[in-house]
Image 1 (cartoon, rainbow, N blue to C red):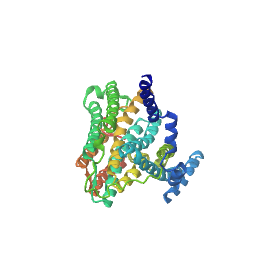
Image 2 (cartoon, helix red, strand yellow):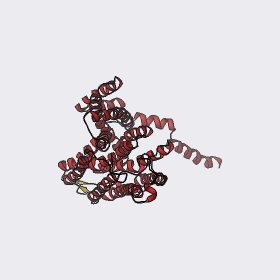
Image 3 (cartoon, rainbow, N blue to C red):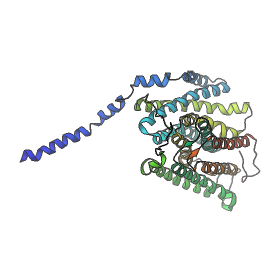
Image 4 (cartoon, helix red, strand yellow):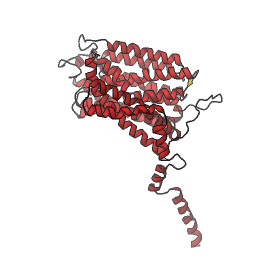
Length: 424
């Protein structure tokens, strides 16, 4: 009786132990990458897989030129050329991770690691009191992602494929969140421009000395946006992940040939993290040299913040997104471009407002009227183009045209008439 009672319990316990091996064993198994390429094979492919990696020689040149205080133009050139192959490697690591993690998660990882550069540069500028550089670089990052990067991806992908297809419902949900974040920038601008309370108590510059009401609106909105972004992550990854995956179609042409696993999952993750760290250093060196280079070549401040800095900071996402579009992986392209913009608008910018609050730096969500209008029309155009879940080279050309128009406007020396009008 006792034996028959205890026997199933022992068997069940043995089965449970078999199903749940110790944590250390699971970690070791993951790091070894069973049934996956070895670490040596992974990094051999990662480093020597393409002739393009010969440009990696500019990484030590970037470090040496910065540490030895060479000419700013050389630091800028070496750092820029170093970021180009690093961005390609970041895309390769993301593509390899997508084999196991899926396109949605790997695209989110790519956007997050890519935006680490913006966070580092933004916090450094914020702590130095360069509030306008923080605002213009964040705005430029959003515009660069949804206009330049997405436009290039649609255009180049359209040259390789007749039509790109992605899940329009998920893309529209992401674009709607971008619209919400855009509206949250309109409200502080409207408050500062149309109300007596918003326009009084300035100390010469509305952005260096905002009113108490403007600070309250910005900080309260920042907290709400951080909550909405957390809810969006849950929506994208847990409750409605099917909206961000293209359903299989019987008429599937080589939509996704399937990425061949050339790297282990753990090795790809380590490579992704390592490349991001190196990119952050090179980007920091490049950013530190841009101002001196711009003064020497008479480049306007607005052009630096809205165009140059974002192009450099988004180089990783740019290369990866275009590459994925060429491979007809438009879900990953949308996740990188729109997802990265959402992350900046709903996470990075509110986070910087909170950090400024803690560090006693009066950073607000009040952007210049020109910048607010530019962001609004850009988000409006992106919404129109992605709502049908299809793309072609003509849509990419439209996005690129709007970006070039904005770049031309920012290149002009714009002087403010008063605190209500735009200024850079």
